[in-house]
Image (cartoon, rainbow, N blue to C red; front, side):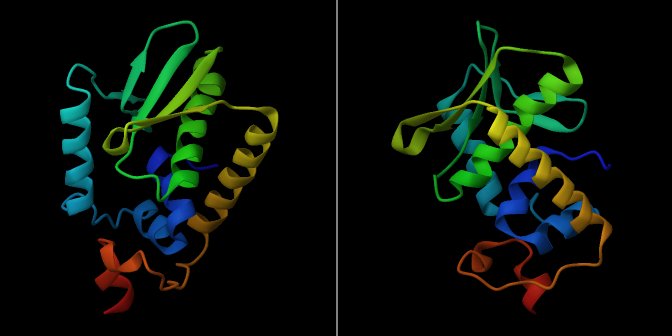
Length: 164
């Protein structure tokens, strides 16, 4: 099984082609306006909080060492809520399985609309996440999936690659 990171979990829900390209080191998002905007939003809304990179795989926006341990992800909008939820669930799962940490809760922070959503890794969510991880590995190991044009494609850094 390949090492999967949070971005791949996120892309799984957004676009399988984008997931495959990113997983094969074809990365075009570094210069994306949306990525830059997200970083600025995090920096302005959570000035005292530092990102935490764990094992070069997961990049948590910030962690609060409380009981339970709080893992926070800052997002621009709720439009991709399911991808955000499973990215955070993956972080909790990874810390549980790879680092032996227990008693962890996640929070999705949407500072633009001042909303915070609590996320917990239940048995059902863990089973669903394991299925997603297996599916991601199958996608990565297969040939590139054919792009499926949707309304979000116009804003995607990979748009020209897929549809030019």
